[in-house]
Length: 201
Image (cartoon, rainbow, N blue to C red; front, side, top):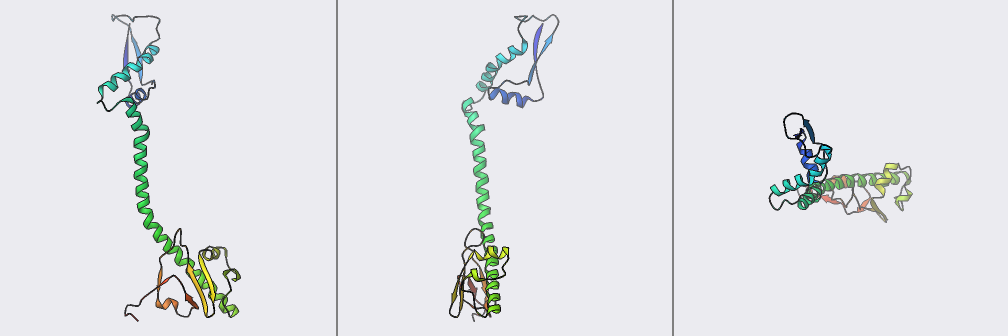
């Protein structure tokens, strides 16, 4: 009787188990009856003999690899280096794309905050004949209006009011409007730029 070790289709699983110091069922004993030489011990469990031989098999595989590929270095590479390099690459790509996205989002949200606040202040002026002393005096505001009002800074002036945009999405936006946008408003001071007309007037 002799024992023949047959490789299962999942040879990658078998090698991985050997490298990680684990036994695997990827190799299985097949007992063949015939004129072959008998086993050294007829009472030994073939599976136990295979499991006991795993350290030697692992040692042979590592010995066949180039010297830098030791068991410790391979474990470190698989468990730490490759995941870390993947994380660094993903983070770099995310930051590169997020910078432009954040800038655009700040401009869009800042634009909405600024226009909403102006509309509410001017509507208050139409109803009451004067501009509000503070944004807290505005009446009939909606829940979405409150989001705009907390992202601007308002001050009533003797001849109108001042309004600054302090936050867009996550940062301070860069926005500007043409000369026609400011026509008819009581807004006298702001940190928002005016786009100069093409003819310089």
